[in-house]
Image (cartoon, rainbow, N blue to C red; front, side):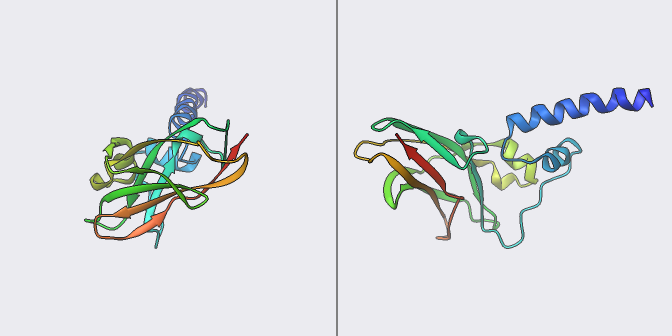
Length: 159
């Protein structure tokens, strides 16, 4: 029993550390990764991704007239249909566009999909002219084949 406990403590420590590094994965998904199992693409879901700048929160607070920097990853789940462009919208107003995607081997490895590697992104934009209050921030994705989809929206609380 003591041997088993000594073996499990480092595994739970790694799972906790891993979940901190990859906040878009829940504990069950982290354990899958540790056991070298791949995450499953949810059936019927065309777009996967995460805005990692915000951690696991659904609201982002910022000062009026400030600059926002967002980072994350986004993929289209159909084979041979890579991401081409992201549009960042606040209350439907176009704020930024991303067309350059960086390597995210962690995403490709987690899903067992090498085609998911070129999925990392970074966007920055000014909130100049945005009034104080709560706004809806949306990341809209377009694939090379013309498919579109959105990441879950965030509330942008401008103070």
